[in-house]
Image (cartoon, rainbow, N blue to C red):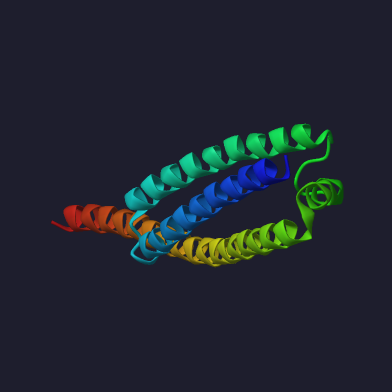
Length: 154
């Protein structure tokens, strides 16, 4: 079981890294769409991101299956899970896995930080768009008033 378990866990890590790298690429595009105020493009990117997030949820189920294989109820975020992995595959394999999990965590944290930054940009862009829309609305009201005023003079 140690070699098989190592292979299964390593495969799940490969899958997860692939998903995070796909998300990273989409976040790059998302930032570009926000910077250029391309709202239609942004919505398409958000849909693609949702698809990847759904795939991550399926992947989480696979991690839960590993918990079941180990005979534990705790998921991969808990110490019981990692202690069971360590005792099942040995220190060398465990250290390799932990290094890769740290890579996933770092990538995930970087993505969250970038998402926060992009969200801030989007909020600024939306505030600017609201101002422009309000200005357009005020200009239309002013033009109507001006037109009515001119009509009564003529």
